[in-house]
Length: 422
Image (tube, rainbow, N blue to C red; front, side, top):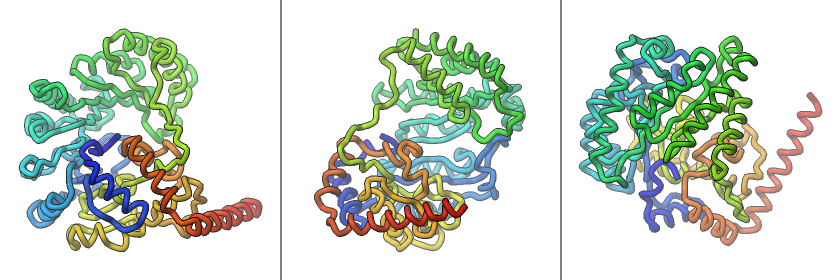
């Protein structure tokens, strides 16, 4: 489960389910992703959010605070702090944390580079923080300065912030401590430092250590064949060492380097025979598709609202503007209902949906493919998805299914004709 779902009561789940199955919206939002600024304190060469950057901060007193008051009076239970910039450079972060604490709204997760983290660590843990998603990226000051295009001394602030969070977390009861997740970017220029990445993560008290690739690198910056073989050997060594820990920490996600990803998975299976990624649920009816339109909203630093963080910055995906509309006007408005209508059809068809930009404003191919987007397949509990599947099967009229299937068949035929014509 992701993004605060464990805060949902049975009544919350029932109201959300009713909206999915019968239409409309019967509560929420239960969660809000806040991107309070698109300003960043570093300038990573690989950043995918640079096109968001316009030096903007959400107006606190006039815009964000009134909306949060309204949301807290409804169903709001958790927030995410993230964005196209560094969320913790938001100048009103302290009032924001104070509001969350006062109203019992937890921080489901914060995405940060940790450079400003030290001054907020105690307060975030006191409010209630579930996950700190920290992009450290490089394992030493020299590499950090080069990759993040900043001064080497910033790396010291990063380490200070992570240590401050670890100290604050350890003061909490064991079941209430936030998970501290460190992410390193593994690429050809730092491959020789892979053991140091894991070593540093252990030294800092990480609960999880992610090794990721950099998505979309130019060909000349990707691993050469000889470097892949060399990196495989190093991966084997760090995976074997990780397996000897009482609680393994390492997770490898190298989707843009599939050979390394396959090798890492095979080595983990070899040294830890009981290891396996989360097993797909074998439910009779598949209804694990995006519920965000009934559950959450994302507020960008511009004040524009999107149903999903993946859509931020795309003009045709806007579902509101908190500078111009109330929460109710946005959440119950035509744009959000259009989103829900499209995803309701996807759920009713159990994913057998032929995508077309002509008819699908919000649904994208990534929304349809299983496991391509984490929000689309593991947001809720397995028990909820089971109940949802039963309700969809029981309450969806056969006429609706036939009409949806007919539309799908026509689109498939049109796509086939277009493909042949090409």
